[in-house]
Length: 456
Ligand SMILES: Cc1cc2nc3c(=O)[nH]c(=O)nc-3n(C[C@H](O)[C@H](O)[C@H](O)COP(=O)(O)OP(=O)(O)OC[C@H]3O[C@@H](n4cnc5c(N)ncnc54)[C@H](O)[C@@H]3O)c2cc1C
Image (cartoon, rainbow, N blue to C red; front, side, top):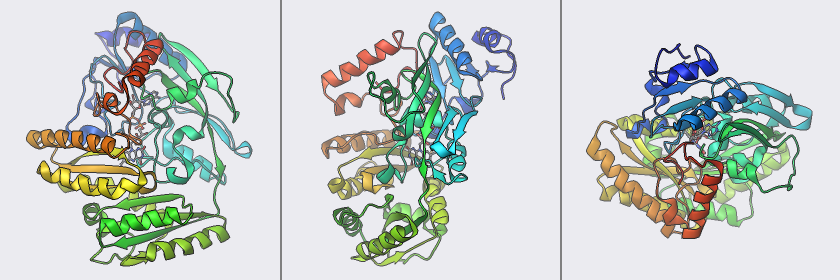
């Protein structure tokens, strides 16, 4: 936790929040996020640790009065540099807003503060026979506020949708420092403009989320993953299209290409055929009967054209799947990863072109991701200390974004624009749509102090 401060903006902020809630010699841990492994770092004049929405409001009001930029920070697991303070100023850490204000399992809902860690919400639901479906891959560290600010997805978004679908109410602090409340513990609300959806996914550029009402559903009785292995991208993507075309609705449809499979395969919970160069993971869930029937159908459909189909135990499989990014990072110490989206019928092209773009830039490239959503995590393996290689990875990323747009998709399916994709919204969207973004930003944040340099 923070130490008391003596000078600089930290002194005044400490008067607002009390001793121990401000750092004026920021620890680098608060000026980086998961883009650290691609060499991205910011700088800050102070780091603050408010403990309530009202204290968040005081900090924002102080920043507004003194024209100081403010960057909200959740768990720092973002892959777009969104929590990196690129223009200095104050980093506002939400760790201390970590209370579960209400949990009502019989009504399938909870009211939690923004700093509650994602895994805690998932566990709370599970222990009570419920499920909170969003499952982004760093749940031990990411926070509900960060998930909402990025509208995070994950493997099970194929059937259950992204974080925003599970939020019924928001408490947020907006410039110049007021606490607002939108929605609540009710499931339908068309009374006003949809400000809740506007804040969700706004990456801390319109307001600071301080609490949310979340909704849950009863946990499915059973979940059975089915893993198909193929000798090429065409066969693997063909199998994915066959699953969807058959009208089957798995909870998740994931893939790994050959390079990612090589990097992570040794730890896979089960035997893998040596000639497999593409993996498809689907999961059947529902009542015992429904899940078993769907599992059998998936085994049949994924089996066509495969070299093997295996059915690992779900907890082990998903723990392994969460480790894929780390297995790739461990190869050379870093990776530059993007999260482009393409229409499902262009998935094979995006996967193959990712490798081709890497080759053009003399980079090892691979991808994995949420196949059913067409969400491709295209990665270049890098040494984070090799500046020339990082430059080539940046140039490669530009080509990935251009490819996503050319194939009729989007530059981001779940990580957001942040800092790494700055400027690209203008190329994906038309002039007037981007102008509307700027006008909205101005309405919320007329001084442009909330997470400057991000999103637009
Ligand atoms: C191994 C690994 C796997 C991942 N897998 C997935 C995945 O499957 N799907 C996915 O979507 N993401 C994934 N991510 C990315 C990341 O976990 C998500 O983007 C997550 O939602 C970020 O949450 P955070 O609390 O760490 O936010 P941070 O990184 O701290 O911040 C992210 C953005 O949100 C803003 N922000 C944070 N908290 C608030 C708040 N309370 N109010 C307003 N703005 C705020 C920040 O300013 C920043 O712009 C993965 C990351 C890692 C490291």
